[in-house]
Length: 404
Image (tube, rainbow, N blue to C red):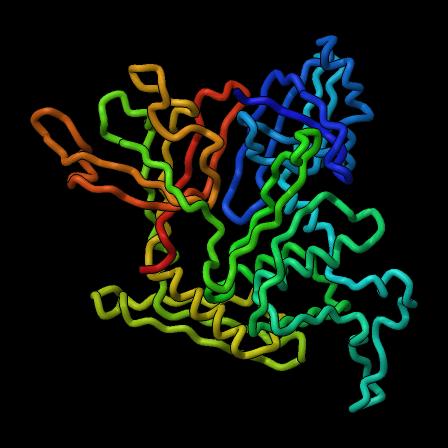
């Protein structure tokens, strides 16, 4: 059963059930999900919630719940009231969206004079440089723990103690330095970490507190040994079985993003031009024409090995076409006995692997699939889940592993 709740973002408490007219929600891979609901203010139960005060944008959160599993939850950003229809619309995004509005700055930045964000450059006193006292530096840590430290530092500021739970620290060999003068958003830095070669994935995973009276977010990151954020088990859908819970399967391939040669440009942070090159002969050797691209989105990178890793990851991702599978599944499929007849919504999340089973295609009986003609089990990762207030079906977006 799908239900929606609201509560106080700072504490995760004072949660209230929210009756909705319509409710659309979606979870996306490495991206803050979305929740959009419309409520009827003619409803006495809705009126009793005092939504003018309990659903204040940025002070409240909205969550969508399946059973005891919170599929997505995060700050309410937009609220729209229509007096003629007496309806109220609320739009929220996952907790990661909050850290788009938080910058990588130590607490000192709150009290130091703004004229001290730069200091004279010791090498040339006619020039200035970023004040190193405002640099956030991390070393001898895993990349996942560096991402964790960025979120932890942001929560040290007054008013920032949103209910986030963290994994234990993990040692490593990585180092990152963030100049205060760059005013870099926390989420952007975490995205950069995830996009490095073998970089760890991350997720702000909402869940109920142990007393079921509040909501908290577990900040999950990949580890040195396992950079993926995924479950150990994989849901299995039988696509071609009689009375399959799967419908509307589509497969879309886009080869325009393929490349064998990738260039990265950096060095802006140190006023020097840096170039990194990634090259893989796999496609050219297989008879494909050479394709290349350039990425300057990491222009602040000042370390050559880091820029090299972006170039390598860029080419690895370009070896395969951009391929998206999607289908619709029954949220709570049942078999003829009335018991569970397939994966139940809430048992799988974005980032999990999923298996799709195809029978061999038989043109005489129509059994199997005329495109996926061989009997096979195809494993992809779930990159998106979306549903609505009815809770009968869930749209599942899948993607293949990156690269060959």
